[in-house]
Length: 94
Image 1: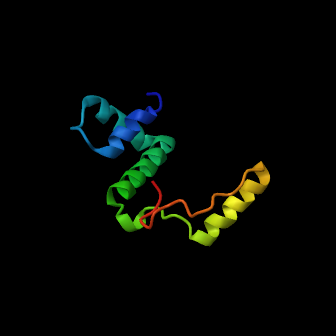
Image 2: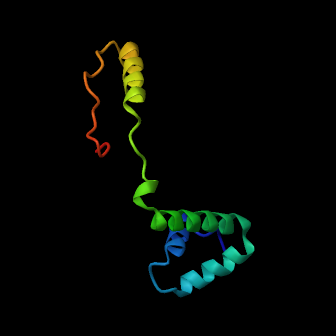
């Protein structure tokens, strides 16, 4: 059997649907193929991390002094004036 397609490995990692005959064949291949097995392990870890993420795990905006330094540097390089205020409300970007 050829290597398992990445999309199929993603589906196996997600465990969203009942197993099919194609899944059984893919899993037999994965049992003997380090490359596919390693990719499935990595994808399974990614799915687990995404499903268990909490609000505290989400990125936060940089402190105002960091933002000001970034905008100064970008403004200097592009020749545009920096913004006059910190761009995000207290609860973060977006």
